[in-house]
Image (cartoon, rainbow, N blue to C red; front, side, top):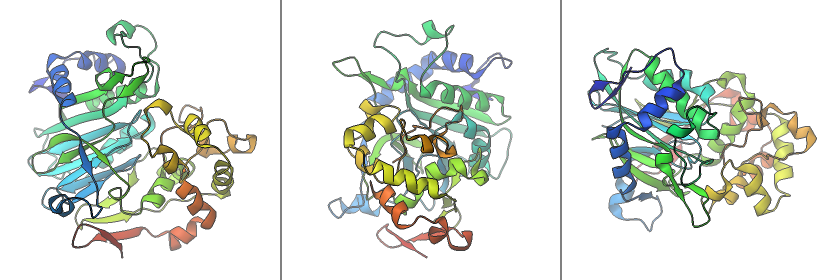
Length: 374
């Protein structure tokens, strides 16, 4: 059940999520909240020595694509994600418990089970408890500067973000819990245009301040996307071919122990072949073939892609691999980062080398905020 401003948001529950999404995008409270969010300064996270002492003392949990994490405000100061251009970051905050769950959603097919995973540690299950919700990301990569969402309601809403946003809203609406939506900074609300009229996201990342539940635009550098960055990036694409993760978000963080527990994921020799093919591409080819929004990617996208990613225009033998398939049967070109990832796969082609006995990789936080493998 969806609330806005403390009032139930009345919709036709027999309708698809698209109609509810369009109505919410036009709600004055959410329009105002999104307008205010645009003017917040972006906080940059880094674990490098050059950062201030106060920043390095902050404890944060970083969430990669298709991951989720639920954190306790007594143990973690911030939880967040970035690199969400056509993906959507979903926040659910339980003020009563001091718990915050964040997911980086990249497909409508992970929303139903994923939302249940996010809520699984909200233990009180009080039907009257109001859960604060924020959606950020998913810019409108198909729109023109003068386009209007309402005018497109009768037509098919194209673009990678629309179906994902609609599915999230539909699932929130149809569940029994009470979800108070505070921020809906997606689609046109999160879209700007360069001088050539190319659509770009305003923000592609955020953090939640766990003590207050407030949302802050944010970006992370490589030192702060830890621990186990490369393996976690590999899991994003490998999970498409691993039936254990069908329809599920990737488990990453243990709330009670404040440990990262990187759940195992399997991959085949297909990924080795693909990694070798990717290494032969130019930077421009990687950008055009590996992103749903080439003009919107961060400066380190190509480097990240060389560490980890698949192609849109791939060799015929690769097109037969399920790892290339989107949930609708098209090629999977979501933004997942490919040189270091490719290098890792070439050096470790067997998943058992990474996950011996199919056991998770566990990391604990040490003084100063860094992580060590247990």
